[in-house]
Image (cartoon, rainbow, N blue to C red; front, side):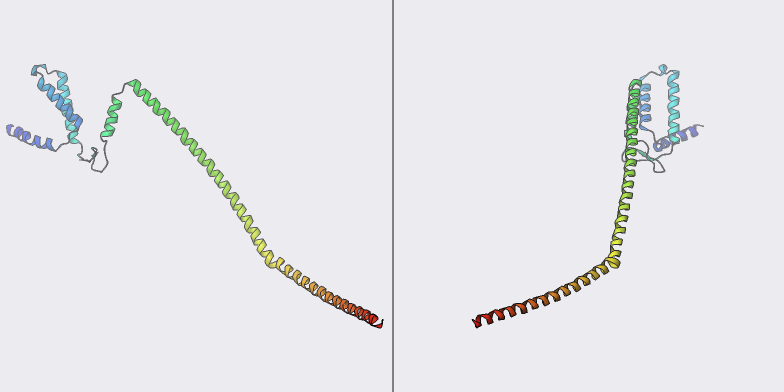
Length: 212
């Protein structure tokens, strides 16, 4: 039996070296050991024995937990690569733990009001977004309708130019040119007749002057 106890004593430090102890639990254990060392042996009560047994149970539970690696930011990483709580979250929890119930109630009320305001703002933004989307869709439909009408007018203009207006314009041009030719011929004939008449009158006047 003595040899088995010695073997357990020898193997116990090796197991303690490999197990992970949280810093808070380690501080509590060191504090309890320092208090126990400063007190006499007769003053140890039943409550201290219970607390010692609870600390041993906590150590055993910590030794049974899976060990993980510690990241560079102070947060532990388990075997699956998931980060546990770091120092900032622990400080926030400790800050909340140090507040009295009135302060906690006021903080909760403030957070509820802030959440309600954010929800209302989010609802207004969504409502405004839906209204803007409906307006954009309506304007898009109107613009598409206008573009369609303009294309129809353009197609009709091109078709009428090629099928109706151009032949009519050409026909009108031919008619005008023929009438111009007729007018020019009539004008030339009239001018020639006037020239002959003026020449006859000039000769007659000249003959009268010579007879005198």
